[in-house]
Length: 357
Image (cartoon, rainbow, N blue to C red; front, side):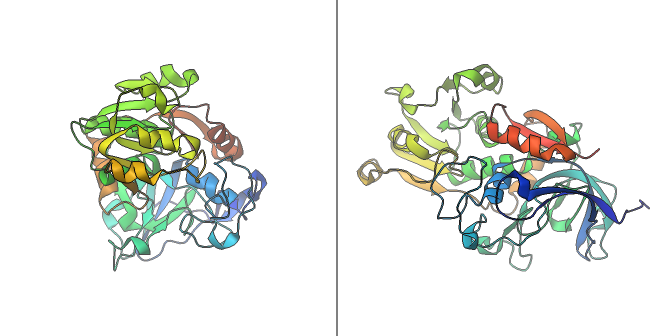
């Protein structure tokens, strides 16, 4: 049996604010494994915008600016993704790849010693399809910016892959978010999908997953990242202004940027087109001409909590080698501040992960 230490290395969020509220401990207690839990030795954990937005309080309705990574004047009453207060201290990190080292008595015993990924949407297992009863791994419970994490076994998926720990840690949040967006917009063969923020974790996943469905992909990115985005295989690349499409129209806009370009994104849709959003890094407040919406028979969609089974689909795509990770960089857990700053600076293409080995 694997020996479990009493303490571990962990980054602990102590409140909303700048990077200094994210504190490194080397003697944090190892979590206890509940009866329905497994204890995971974390090998790597990916970063995502939820980490940053939760730390800064950006989800609060009182915040109107885009994501900057700096502290906001947010109300703590609605500063978490679900519009509720966050309880501190909290270990963040949703994108875990690790090995199961302990199994609760009512958990799946076959998971012991398996390399696993974690579905970051926490379900009420008495009512698992109810989206109003969901939580987020690393928000409503402690996550993976630590040596060990305990999680309900029903959120844990064994993965059979030759990919590295860090590569596998790039999938959970970004790829499940992207798959959820495409499902909501019912993207399929014959669609043309305009993808904002194409160099980011969700954007790069949208390119791959939309192409997997047989859709044409049009990636929006900066000139500095064009060559790197080309390597992701989109059918077309344009700059950050949707007006570059000219007279060309698309059937779907998959947006994680919003902000000032929103009206142009809506104008790029053909009649009957669908707009789906799962982020607003350039700003949550946008201008919408309602006449464009109804005169062009458009559909506006939001996507956050994905249906049960979506993560299992992603794991199958990985195992079948249908999708390829876009790992931009790795940092040791002790350098989480540097990793998150690099993530905020957004000079990378794909995802960033911290490693514990």
